[in-house]
Amino acid sequence: MAPASGPRVLRRRLDRAVVAPLKIASGCDRRCSFCAIPAFRGAFVSRPPADLVAEAGWLAERGVRELLLVSENSTSYGKDLGDLRLLEQTLPQLAAVPGVRRIRVSYLQPAELRPGLIEVIASTPGVAPYFDLSFQHASGKVLRAMRRFGDRERFWALLDQIRQACPQAGVRSNFIVGFPGETDADLAELELFLTEARLDAIGIFGYSDEDGTEAATLPGQLPAEQIARRVGDLADLADELMSQRAAERVGEVLDVLIEEPAGPGRYTGRGPHQAPEVDGTMLVRSARPLAVGDLVPAAVCGSDGVDLVADAISAEATVPARGA
Image 1 (cartoon, rainbow, N blue to C red):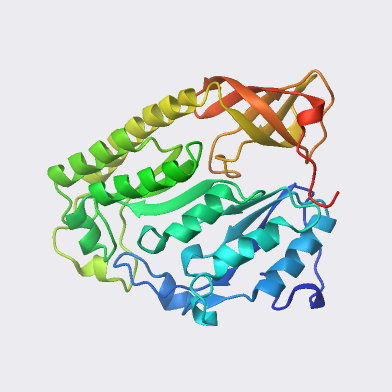
Image 2: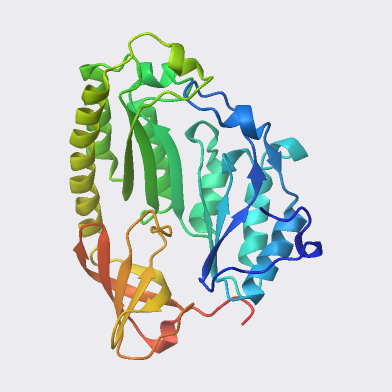
């Protein structure tokens, strides 16, 4: 659990990883028909920015170089503190903490992703231009049954807005297949969206009832076998599309956070579009020694599925730690 007020709580790190989560809020005020989180985690509660900056400093002093900001809905950060744009103000403060090389924001709600927040994530030094968008589907009819915003056209427009702000921006999303009432036409709408969206990472999940949710009582429940087939078909498409997107990145120069050695002159790391554990990785080749925690500019020269291969550029171009 995150401390209530930063350094007053005694803590210790359980590993030496260069990336660590930083919880910015808990709970959720949205009422998606398939989700039970509000029932057991309660209303959305933001942690004060000063607490976040203090914990970020505590983590950086203990070797953390990338902070993954986590909550049930990061776009809502600050609304209970009286400032709907508090995240835009807090991200630069966190990125300026000495020793922190990169900030990454997780779980953004498309319905709440305002232009100012897009601009801050896309352009602030030290903040990864990474958009973890909770689309969940692309059929407007299914999304309305989920009590969620959007449709295929609106989501395409949002992605276009993001890429106008930062053409190299990374985007990932998850999708629920087999929601009650989902038709072949709804599934085709989702397939069309995925084919055109150029997402870096795609998670496909089969719908299942959660006790106490509205969706569990909806008509049009699909057989488990049909849901499994749809998941399999969409997952195969997603794998192909993610491989294509990774191949598009060949030729880009990306800042790679080095996480571990992978053999002589080789290192495993992650680019700004690659979140820990859930996205692909980067194999960096370098004629000079690199250290775990370095942020190194590297030219992407190949891909293998969602994973990339890149060559470190030069010692002079290495991005130093802030305040180091």
